[in-house]
Amino acid sequence: HYGRICPIETPEGPNIGLINSLATFARVNKYGFIESPYRKIIDGKVTTEVIYLSAMEESKHYVAQANSSLDAEGRLSEEFVVCRHAGEVLMAPRDHVDLMDVSPKQLVSVAAALIPFLENGDANRALMGSNMQRQAVPLVRAEAPFVGTGMESIVAR
Image 1 (cartoon, rainbow, N blue to C red):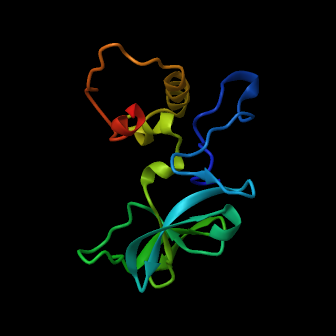
Image 2: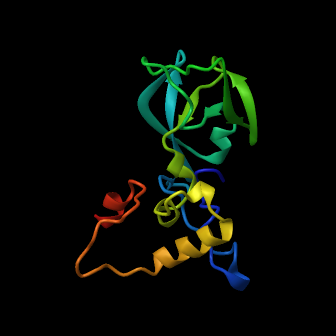
């Protein structure tokens, strides 16, 4: 469910895992399937065209991570790229890769994406932090955060 359901934001206690949140860029299609966005890679060059795929459709493709290194022309610079294919993480030749994640934040929900240095912290703290973010109320006088993730302006809209 990579990029479709947030692995962090879920209630604590007996309902853990029963209630889930959509990932940041995920959407539900007309058939009820959760789709995640990907950028197309044509002839080794990452394009700006974004397509949404369900988990079944994604499993047919080699998907590179959003933070894969690119050269100045927008091509994958490494000979072998860490990617996902058919539910497995593997190193594939760059010629095999045909899709790329749109953002590293597409894995988590909006509440979890607001936690600075999420990948370096304790998983239990991330769980508690994302659940507390859902309960937050707007401030009368808003202040800029000391440390931000880049999602604050989007969430504040």
